[in-house]
Every structure is written in structure tokens, then in C-alpha cells.
Length: 143
Image (cartoon, rainbow, N blue to C red; front, side):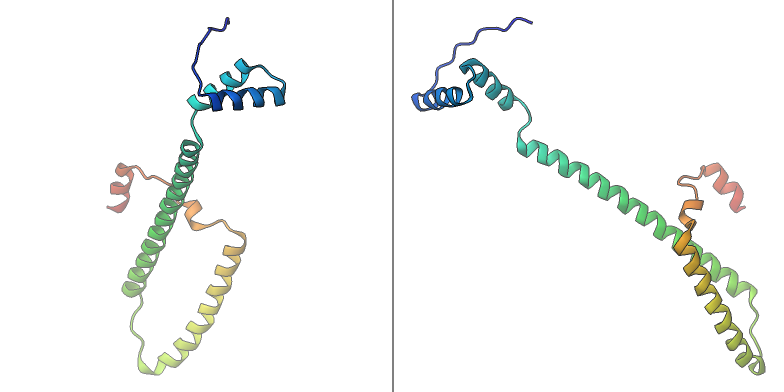
């Protein structure tokens, strides 16, 4: 592609700085001026920084959305468990409560150990649950 000619008027100080820079680098005045104009027309540092910040904010937003999803799963899981436990566990007579507490402590310790193993090697519950559920499936499975 053939280059086009441009005439520009420069302040004497700017012209001197351009000439000195060109001489130090051993390149033509036209090449320095062309590079300066291209730099002026390209996105400046503030715009590049804004773009980088925007990308980072998008990443943070996606992480927050995943945390909200995971928290929602945890809350629904706990609510489902508590509802099931309250509706399926009969009250114990006074004489059996001490033995039940001992057995409950033993079972809780087993639960904590199993939880620790699962957290250490996975998979996580949130990985087993699909991101999106078809609304038609949701209504048919809850009926």
C-alpha cells in the first residue's frame, strides 16, 4: 500500500524534540511521526486499564454467581434434610434418650469423618448437580 503525504505544523520545541529523538534512534522523522500518530489513535493506557478491570470484574461476578449457587444448594440440602428428619424421626421415651445421645454422638463422628474424606478427594455435591434444570422437569419431579 502506498503511503499518503501529510504536512503538519509543529511548535519549535516539539520539532526540536522530534529531530533529536529521530537522530538518537537513527530513524526518519516521518517514521517517528507515523508511530506517534498511530499511538495517539490507538487505545490509551487508561482505556486498556479500564478493559482489564472490566475483565476482572466479570471474573469476580462469575465467581460470586457460583458462590450464590453453591450456597443455595447447601441451604436447600439442609432444609430438605431437616424436613425429612423431623417428619420421620419419632420422639423417644425418657428411658431411651441417654442411649440415643450416645449413638447420635457416634454417628455424628462417623459423619464428620466421611465429610472430611469427601471434601479431601471429591467429587463435590455442587459438581453432581446440573447448572440449569429445565422448568418442565422441575415441575414434573416435584409433583
